Amino acid sequence: MAVPKRRTSHSRQGMRRSHLHLKPMQIQYCPRCEQQVLPHHLCSNCGHYQGREVVPEEAEKK
Image (cartoon, rainbow, N blue to C red):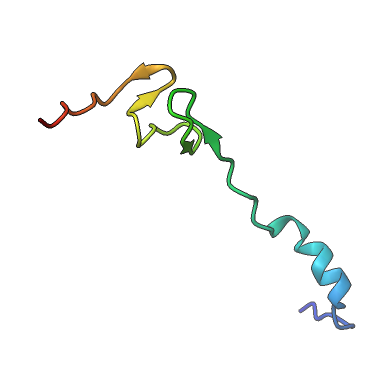
């Protein structure tokens, strides 16, 4: 059975894990209302997605 002869150093351990970091979230802005929107998601403020209205706005209250 294979057993390591030497202890893995902190540097080598860090180099092995260099690709495991978290990437920052990509935030875009709605072209209609300028609110922050995640990519490929519906705008929760105005209900638009890719230039068309997906969720109709509620009628204004009197």
